[in-house]
Amino acid sequence: MEHQFVTGDKVRLTSGGPVMTVRGTHYDVVHDSYNNNMVDCIWFEKKSDGRSEVQYCPFNVSELVPVPPSC
Image 1 (tube, rainbow, N blue to C red):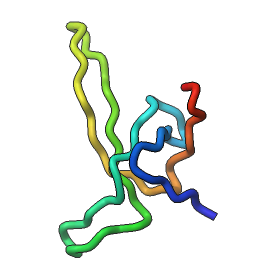
Image 2 (cartoon, rainbow, N blue to C red; image 1 turned 180 degrees about the horizontal axis):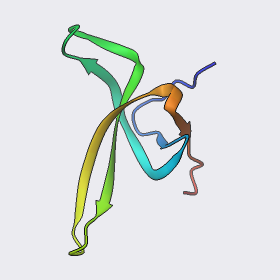
Image 3 (cartoon, rainbow, N blue to C red; image 1 turned 30 degrees about the vertical axis):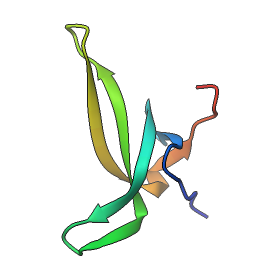
């Protein structure tokens, strides 16, 4: 059974990578509806000049695992 994530949950790709925050259920503009199998995630990436840049991407919930609160 796939995990259902909610806004604010901390997640990581099953393959690893940065800790991301779930923004909410992904809205599919092509089908004009919410896709309950996908969530929009954001995370911050440190650039070589020291600045942080926000990144955003939708992911299928099967690609994500929850991150313990201590991370």
